[in-house]
Image 1 (spheres, rainbow, N blue to C red):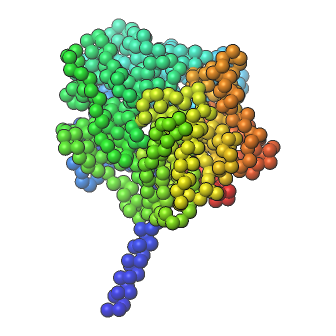
Image 2: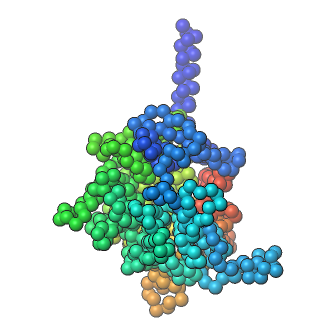
Length: 636
């Protein structure tokens, strides 16, 4: 009997140890990554993909699965083509849409001088000579249609023939940038029909309609000067899209527009928020959309009244400490979506719109998480220096003990107008950071969607202003807690968050013991001279640095420029840079590292030659995380 008790004790002890596993970089890169592909043609199953990174092979492997919309066991399937409706197939089944690159401009030396075929020269006459992580080589994305029943040699028709423009839009556009009209007689596509310097300084994309019969194209949104994107027809055949009003402002309020009987109706004009993605209800009476709100991303609905006197009403459907992400589709009274929170990567859920009830459909990583002791996160409100209430997420380590003192990190979000919600990143992962024994302070500072349009806009042309006070208000408030070791505070961030780190390094007044900046803006003048989307720096900086009579721009390039604060730097700093980052080019990291080194400040420069603004390859990502936490251990 005693022997049995000892065996049971050993088993229970082993189980307890297993349950206390914490998230590490290595475990993070073993998690499956779920992508919802759609609902099957018969409406009975959700089709999805799971990608699992292979660190050894430095790539990811993917498998496809099918699961009932009512839940149950998932079945692995060999392919998805016959199961899903193809949005690129014309309504009459005759034609199939696709896109590919077309060579339209002579850029390369061998284009200009064919006899010099070994030259590697590039010649440009305007901006947009590089974008995100790719140099312009004279190729442009074009939309094509071809006989759906033809063979591989069937002639595909280029609906943008000879035009040096892109659809899908670079660098991230896909087939959401084009769609068939309900009658199959025309194709609607998104394009910014500008080139060179005009392209780099504008956000004015439009919706174009190509008529298959007469081969003509017309601009459907010519009067709008900002972004027009995501064309989609309602089940009743009404063209719908997302629209921003102001040219050059990439983070403008995003609204849902419906063209009904020749009139453009803005359904979200009077709602104080910005739309992320949307989908029509099957009866064409409502549009469901996602949007950031109060530090989360939730599901909303807006009714479509047509030309009746019924008022347009926006209503938040879901609440909770999670993000609703992809809107996959409808089945009966249910909408299929994906969800995340700070401790859990994306899974697929069903939400019953009548019963307001959730059903989790996939459990790809549940077994892995069940073995872990995960952090906890708390929502906190801090009063800012201008008397506003600011939401701050506080993430506490696993097995948190409030009687202990913990090193604490201020997280600075990028964007600068990107939402900080219950998302799950495979690099800037709050659960991973907290699992290494750090308290994380993540403020929804000025410039964050989800707190009203005015809050979101206040950061533009004020990069080093109120937002810096917001950061310090957040860390100072949380530092009052007994569990925060005020002698071991750090600040970390990427992109605008990296800028924030560089700026805070000059004004923190001994608060922080270490800094980490990833692809951060360090010198606003050289940033203006080398970044590729000039419309962004024009808008957020207030104009070029050479406009001496432009008081807004001059304040940006002097008062808000981190390079002018280097004389006050006195704290160790890790600087990370992507070699193919053309948004925040390599010189930003080089200038910052050189300044730190020449001032005698403990510093390290980590260069990823083949990565862009992000770190995507598994082995590089692991190096990133090991160096990140190694630096913190060394300096904090």
